[in-house]
Every structure is written in C-alpha cells, then in structure tokens.
Amino acid sequence: MSAQAERKTENLPQWKKEEVDELQEIIESYDSVGIVGITGIPSKQLQDMRRDLHGTAELRVSRNTLQVRALEQSGLEDLVEHVEGQVGIVGTNDNPFTLYKELEASKTPAPINEGEVAPNDIVIPEGDTGVDPGPFVGELQSIGANARIEEGSIQVMEDSTVLEAGGEVSADLSNVLNELGIEPKEVGLDLRAVVADGVLFDPEDLDIDVEAYESDVSTAAARARNLAINASFPTASTAPALIAKATGEAKSLGLQAAIEDEELMPDLVSKADAQLRALAAQIDDEEALPEELQGVDAAAEPAADEGDEESADEQDDTEPDADEADADTDDDDDDGGDGGAGLGEMFG
Image (cartoon, rainbow, N blue to C red):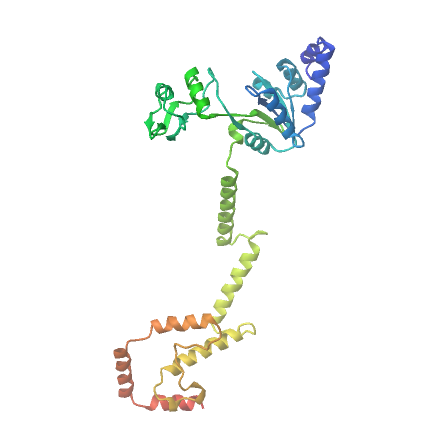
C-alpha cells in the first residue's frame, strides 16, 4: 500500500476502515478479481444472483470510494477506472473465461423502461399479437410496426425494427412492448474487467466461442502432427506413427525385392502362390497342369475372406474381351503347343 493510500485510510471513520479491510480480504482471497455492473438489477434479483454464485464466486457491493481504496491497497489499480456507476467486486478461484461464461449464462430477459438505452435492435416479430381490434393497432403503427386488423385480431405483417441499438426508449414504445410481453434486454451481472495472475482481461477478451476455439486448437494440433510425420520429426507423439510408417515401408521393400526374411516368408509365399495361380489360369491345356491347378480361375482368389472376394471382383473388371482372348489363343497356337508341355514338366 502506498503512503498516500495509507494516509487516506487513516483518516476514515472506523466503520469505513472495517469495510475496506473486509473488501481487501475478499480481494486477496481469490485468484481472479473483477468489477461487475449491477445497474438496473432489482434488490431481490441481486440477492438471488449472489446466492447462485455461492460456492464458485463471491460478490460484494459497497460504496465506490471504499472499493477503490480496497483495490489500491491490494495493488489492483488497473481495476480502479472500472469502478463507475453501480458496481460490485467479484472474486473467484475459477479462470476469467469461466467467470465470464457463468455471469453471461445467469442473465435473464427483462422489460425495458422509458428513458433506457436499447442494448440491441428492438424487433416486433411478424404474427398475431393476440390483441382484439382496437386502438392498440394505432399504437403499433405509431412506433413503426407494420400492423393491421385481420381475421378478428391485430396482426403484425412483418418483422418490424422499432428501435435500433443505442436509441432511447420512448414511453409509447415501452407501453407497447409491455403489452406484447416483449422483454428486449437482459438483466444480470455485467463483467467490466477482471484481473488474474497480474493480467487484466476485458469482456471482449473473454467473449469467445469455446467449442470453435477447441475445434481450431484440435485442427492445428492434427496438422502439426501430420507435418511432423511427413518431415520425419520424432517426438513423443509422432514416434509411434513414424516407426509404423518405417516398418510398413521396409516390409514393402522386402516384398518387392523378394528378400528371404522369416517375417516376410508368409507374404512372399502368398504372393508367389497368387502369381502361380494367375499364370496357370492362362494355360488352356489343363492336362499340362498338375491336378491341383486344373480349373483355376485367375479372377477367383482362394476364398479366405471378403477382401479376397473384392480382389477377385476387381480382376474380373480387367479381364480382356472375348475377341482379344481369341486373338491371344490364336497367337499361342501359331507358336506351337510345346509351351504347355514344358510347363507341365516344370510343375512335375
């Protein structure tokens, strides 16, 4: 506390000193401390809001001069400029984003009175007002609503903006809105600023779409991981994927080079078997083939699972046309029948 602030406090009456001490105790008891506006909140509703905050935050309302003294003595001068009008001090151990979200969620719709400033555009929606024909249709028209009598009641023919944000509410508009039950403003604790870990946050800093923010962070993390994997940059997150990628590439290379490794042998045997059956299917003279290869269809892999059946379907799509097959057969006949006999001898 500065010497000047200490001198000011010394000159205070005893009850004010005690009030400042209590405010300072609240301020120093919480990780996050903010200033909230309470203008226009009825006393009963304010008590309800204070009760709803119990367990997560504490709200204390006092004279502005005493709040300023308590803030200065606690080293939170950054909040002093926000102590203006009807305000209170709120303290919480939650982070500022959670506090802002909780205060916004606690706001409730309320009527707006004559002389108040519209917080947003005031719109009378299209539809049946539920009011019987009478002078009220003129009141609607006088404030700018497109209204007329139809089917025995007063109808608003289209959404009508009767006052833009920042405009002052007239007596006529307030009466019409009350008659229609339209509550164009929200009543609640209005967070003006909050300090946490020495950092000052304005409402604009805290008003974020949490779901969109989480989605952006998740997308950025996935892209960073993908970049690291493609760049072969090892981290605790990318190492398993890099090892799996390298293992797959090594296995593919081993199969292509027909390296006789113990782990590759099952795949090499399966590959050789598939090639043998494909070759046997091209031999027209079945007697030249061993019994187990006779009648083999290159499009019909061994029915081990559905994946094999799909492979067979893909091969069917790539088979030559009948004319092309006949031409190939004619060419084989021209070359002589020794090829089939030779394969027969080869396969035993």
